[in-house]
Image (cartoon, rainbow, N blue to C red; front, side, top):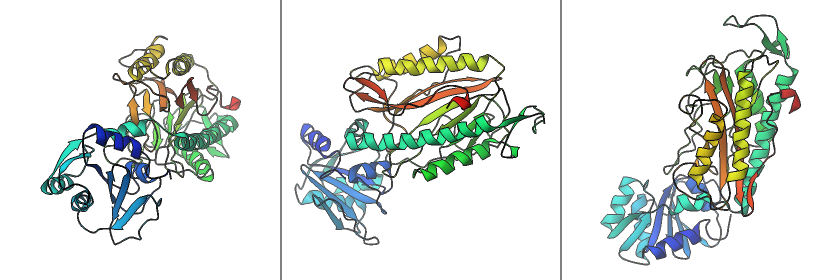
Amino acid sequence: MPSDSRGGAAIDAAISERDAVGFVAVCRGDGPTGRYLTGRRLDTDFVFVRIPGETHLRVPSTVDRPELDDAVSVRVDDRPAGKAAAAVLGEHAAEGTVLASQTIPYDAALHLESAGYDLASTTVLRDARAVKDEDEREAIESTQRAAKRGIGRAAEILAKSIVSAESDETGSDDVLVWDGAPLSTERLRRQVNAILAIEGVDAAGATTVRAGNRGGSDGRGESTDGDDGDSDDGDSDERDGRAGRGSAVELVADEPIVVSVAPRGSAGYRGALARTFVVDPDGGWERRAHVACDAARDVTLVEADPGASAGFLGSEIRAETAAFGFSMDEEVTRDVGGGIGLSAREDPPLDGDRELAAGNVLRVRAAVTHSEHGHVELTDVLVVEEDGPRMLVDAPTGLDPSRW
């Protein structure tokens, strides 16, 4: 982990700017905020207190005390989180302003206020997490390489599939057969997840296979692992309606098949990659939709510069997609991405008036959905560098799985 505490300098600056005495967070040991502040996954919830230049952790006696950097003071304290934090603060100041995220537990806030401290909300952690240091960027890139191999496995299987003359359960002809049996969304998803496991990353409940507009609990032909459980301290990882397992359907030729992954690496950092494939294509809608998404993807490599508006980037992705004749209101996705890191969704969002900064790592997504033709999507992860944006992994974007 970094010396002292990742984010420590930013927290100290916020404390100084607000004339506060310290900062308090109540964290899940396996949650994104806890991992960010400690540099690792802990097996327990803990109280984090930052006094300018000092980091203090308080953990319960029911677990072994974690061994962290020598600059971090780790002690056992079984009192409620707010009382444990107040005890640390009391060694430095008997009263004053204490900074905390809006999501601090209500009882912890009451204990701090009862101890004589004025609680003030801050976004310092959210803002600090939006700009990744070199170690964080390398961790995300490593996860993204694994994501590419997972999608590559799907492409390999689809390329080796043969088109059967038999009908599927809905009466559709041209069922895809792989390894002697009909290929379903569920079979393909399991194969992708197997590769992710071999690569040493966790699928994180985020692998989806979507077949045209058929099947699934939401009617979108999607097989998914369900919720990825990344949320804590206000982090949100809801994925554009992807929660809940869809019903497996058999894959057929001439239908867009979207394979999407968002694995979690060993250091906790997420990746995101989605590609659309069509086996034995015959129609034109998916080609036009794919050209639109590919063009929108190219826009991100032009517009995602330091100092650019994140909201403008998001609007340009949607506008470029719609420029190929798709309805902005009914067909072009509203979820065009945003920051990614220890959570699948972090700052900056690609809306509003925030400026992009060097060190931002963004999930960028272009997608089109039609009630009859199905869904086409391209999702990647890029880093905003001083000299401009760069895709962390160069993955093929074509519809033909045999050209992966």
